[in-house]
Image 1 (cartoon, rainbow, N blue to C red):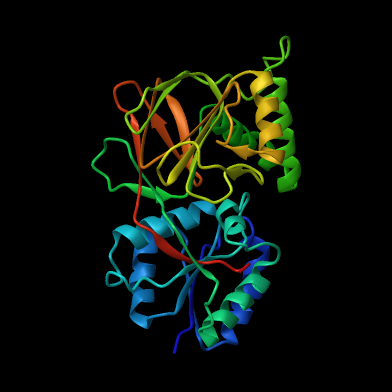
Image 2 (cartoon, one colour):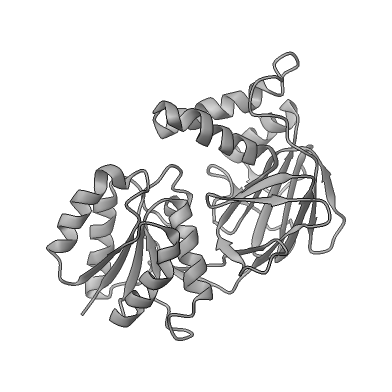
Length: 323
């Protein structure tokens, strides 16, 4: 009986050091089915094989991009009968680990895997199964929608790309690279320092639930179905119905400072804050002139006349390690 099917991406950042330990652990456990992929194009075949062994849990061992590709295939590929998709566990890995953090997976990925195996072996899931809607992204192409849980756009996308292309190659620890990128973003809004990277974001138009559009330049644009929208910020109930949460922050220093204060100490959506736009909805459109958005590590581009459309999906079961 297979308790856990583990899908690993050897090319993810964390696996370069951790995968030998994980391979050895899996080799000692006959109740683990371990499938490694070298490229996201192989994830469909991986999940088809995983479906044949009927695991109690599917664990994903890779960065947010690997998780995004696995969720897309799991949702669109129909490898499991409807209503019989096993809960998905995400091991802490990669550069950002946003999805893993939301599901309570932190620290050593091998310890997280051992925790998952322990829960699955005994079938003791009480208090550990949570449901999350996914973000379905389409941009007018004929391809199937791409699914994920965290989208960054406008200035945030520029910051992520700056971090990816300029800071990660320096070999800085993840936390330090993210801190330097954040400082560069703040500094670029100070008069006289605007030549610093990342570059100023392009204007975008965001429409939620067919309401009045939000237009402007935004230092931060986030859409997510995760519980924690930003840092440890909680979300209030005053922004309206909908499963996707949107946060847009004006591209000025004062708005960023107010965002940081609310994110650390407040409740987003409870009170109106100058320069911050918080909405919730099941359909969100983003349109701009060559404005990039990043969904769980994958880059997409919104252009005038060809908006990116986001829709929330039906709930998908996940295994939350911190009950």
